[in-house]
Image 1: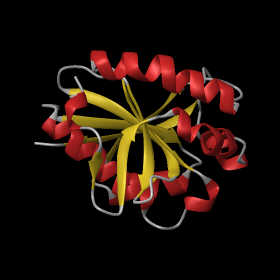
Image 2: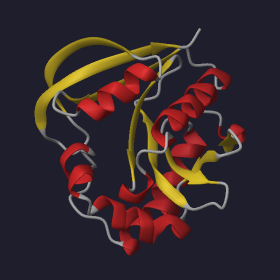
Image 3: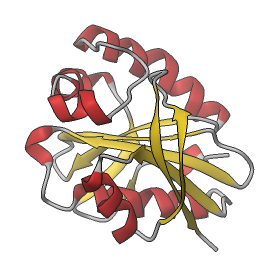
Length: 176
């Protein structure tokens, strides 16, 4: 389970913290980006500031409290929303990670740094492994995962959080 008392977690340039209603506008704006729509595989087909605020106020606190779902914002030192990182499918030893960045936050190392913060959070929560899946056509995400210590474990057709069945590359990072 994810230990909520460890949040927020920071590397001094950026942090992971629970998604907040103050992130709603930038989150919703980011989900309109064609790359997020193509590769984000978000559970909902459309996000508005209002639906994001409801998610932040209702779903996020429940998942954080039970420790089995962490919908987190990647933020900079000014607490500006840069993107989203989610830990889901949490068990007593593993969690799956998914992430996306707002289009104006790309190319600055935020994804790799957020993955490292997620690994630190997972270790401190007692987990021993992170997994990830990404579309085989999403080479940028694959490179980021590999630079972040994830190893590809296979390719198969599987269901994404959005409900699509596509060819996915599976990744694993052992933490201990």
